[in-house]
Length: 251
Ligand code: 13P
Image 1 (cartoon, protein in one colour):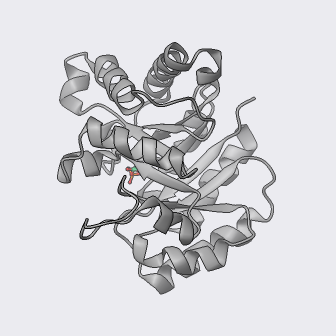
Image 2 (cartoon, protein in one colour):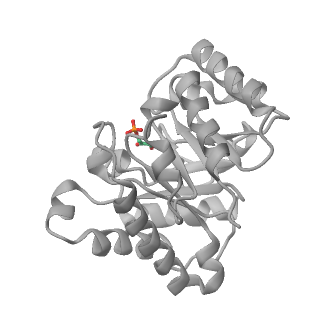
């Protein structure tokens, strides 16, 4: 049985006080949770404060990005040892917003994944097609290529998590249907098996894109959907907790 994971990507939202409060609500709720993983990804500026709130609890801390070098003249960047220093166990890599707005290539994503595993931080690797790519019928080609390039030369690690986030579903209120998600998740699992053998098929695959308390039930019920990466609905404790509660009920 694969465990479930619910991750909240706060993106560029929340000041320190707001972050601390949201984290506290989630930590309080998490005391009732025994299985699965709850991960939150606040902005860099709030990581330390949120770590103080989550320390010793079930809630794990993620960064939203990192640099692949350990240190040096990379103005504005944050390295993996720095993220470890502040208590991060996870880091989101290759989010479509980074690919789109910051020209992050598959090659850079590959270097970042390599570095995360060297520093023993679990990468949440994001992949997904645009609306145009889906309409032209090349979803599997696009997602398969992103995964193969991201994982090129990288040894198997249980820490690796994949998040399927169709670009057209992010922040649009238009989530993938459970069937669409299942189809691509199954495809991703096959790609992971082709790279790593049977154990590749046991890696966690999350769905992301307009997940809400209303649609989580149908999505999480799909066989190959192990969890979700939530944006907008992770910014309020009520909706994020409702998503975890529904997952607990169904997984
Ligand atoms: P939304 O849930 O706001 O669509 O964002 C999804 C996402 O990008 C998570 O990384």
